[in-house]
Length: 291
Ligand code: GUN
Image 1 (spheres, rainbow, N blue to C red):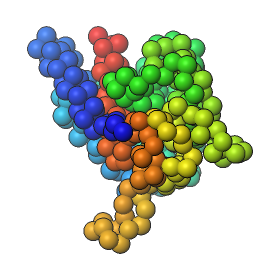
Image 2 (cartoon, rainbow, N blue to C red):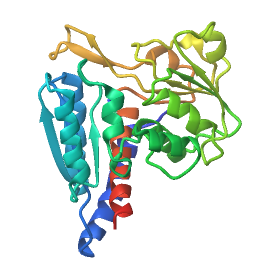
Image 3 (cartoon, rainbow, N blue to C red):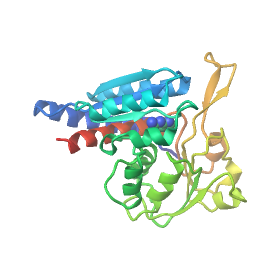
Image 4 (spheres, rainbow, N blue to C red):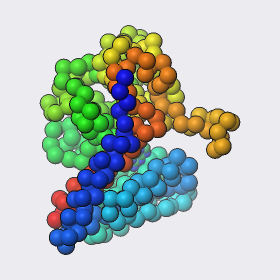
């Protein structure tokens, strides 16, 4: 069993990005600048966003964190987005999800200038991705493709089962892995909460991407020997033995699944760090597009 080490791989990618940034700076080219909007004070979201900002510093990007109150009106958030759209120094920005109830997520994502949409969530970028046109790829699926590529996990002709049809992970992952591309060309099944006999389907899978958000959902009895397992889940599970009161659990029961897997991502240290690295890659791309 080989661990797909997202932490190490993401550090390699960050080193590569840092070199490009250094080179840009020495040539007098613009320093990439990422902004992140966070609404409210959800603990997990704040952790993710501060990791994104810290990673910007690591690779030599400029970063701006815009922290807005939980009860902000939709109009005000849209105004903040418009400011970032117009700010010439900002190459790309993200609005951290989820958003509070009073805000229409679709409206917010559609307000982001597609050229600065480094999350790849705007319909223009989703459409381009679907049509195999150059676009910003959503960072989590992009990170999974990169991890598979760097560990040379063959996807062509393989049976892939993606569990979960979210707009951020499952749906785009299913599209990307089925495309005629390097580390694509897979036969993809997109399973979800209405799927019947899921175990029968997962047992036929060469590669499983678990992205449904239920802690330790995928168990050893649901997979075949030699499977590759990508665990996108990261749930805080109450654990009084830990000082912080919780532990982080993936969507995969690592203990049982890793006994059968050829390759598996850990949680933490698998997909999470890759997501951040690919967000940086998209931001660098956005900056280069504007050169
Ligand atoms: N919430 C969970 N994942 C993501 C992500 O990749 N981008 C944003 N903006 N919010 C998220």
